[in-house]
Figure 1 (cartoon, rainbow, N blue to C red):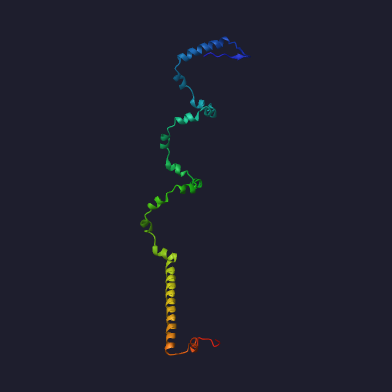
Figure 2: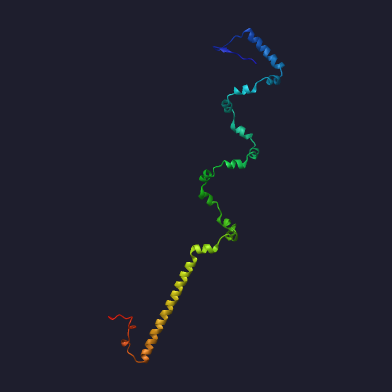
Length: 190
């Protein structure tokens, strides 16, 4: 290992001690086993002297990630621990509901529904009562009955008028002399 120190662009002259130590260093390195030297190094002290940020600046993240086995890494991840750290509300805030619903096939979803199983626990009688179906049926029935009765009354009134005219002709009564209605129901002034 030959290094040249320079001073003002000119090689610096080495003293005799520097030349001797350089010559001895080469022979010492060749003679001593590196493992013996490493056994005497205090690793903790060495690590304390390392500037981690400078070391990390020298690492190529792409090259490092290329060496990572993603499957082995995922095998070591505990899904339960991961899910316990997830804030569901924050996750749901990031979900685009419209986009999600556009991906749903409603027909397939409905095909998978078991209506009998869904209605098994439902109290249909209570649901019908709560919806007011009995009142609607009663009101419709009374309206229908009232309409049928009104129709029957109109038919009877029409028949009564026809019979009254027929009887008046047969009895030769003058229709102008006939009372407008029963005396207690007809007003005195006309």
